[in-house]
Image 1 (cartoon, rainbow, N blue to C red):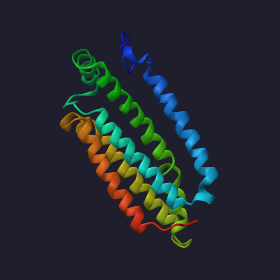
Image 2: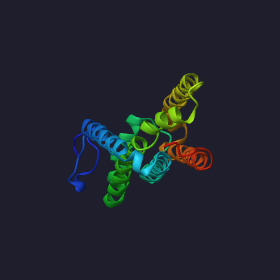
Image 3: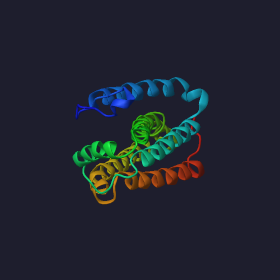
Image 4: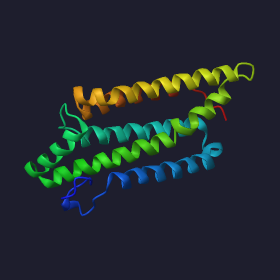
Amino acid sequence: SGNDNTMGTEEQDVDLTPMELTVGIGILKFLTTIVVILFVERVGRRPLLLSGMMVILISLTFLIFGFSGYGEIDIQQQQQQQQQQEQQIDSISSSIKSNLGIIGIYGVAVGYAMSFGPLTWLITSELFPSLIRGRALGFATVITYVAAGIVSRTFLSLQNDIGLSKCFSLYWIATIVAIVFVWLGVPETG
């Protein structure tokens, strides 16, 4: 595509601007959270948490394959490299990778909105007895913010050092560890 602010190729006939992608993610997260709120009592907290984590895992797999071949580069160089690669390699392969990346991004957002986003706070508030609930929630909030800060602080460095695909592979491994932890250690609290 001739516009540097779009994602995709001319062969796809679909060019989405970063703004359109961002608004789409926001709408999808909002709708997913509403569905979780409506079904959390019927389906259960733990099954929804595990299901959302599986969506994240599958979506990270899409991101790993969608960004395979991107080396140790920064985000601006990535867009330039993608344009060069699209000219050098088969447009179908490039289109598939681009679509995998977009599906992966949306999938991680949906998985988060159906698991960690709303359920972390609900499960944590139900897990602890009322005598220590306030302190426990405060501690859980600090841990959550520290973990989010570590991811935010290290993402660009990791991406530059090892590439996006390997960076998403590390998140994939962390998600597996989280799934095992929830499977073995988090009771149904509803």
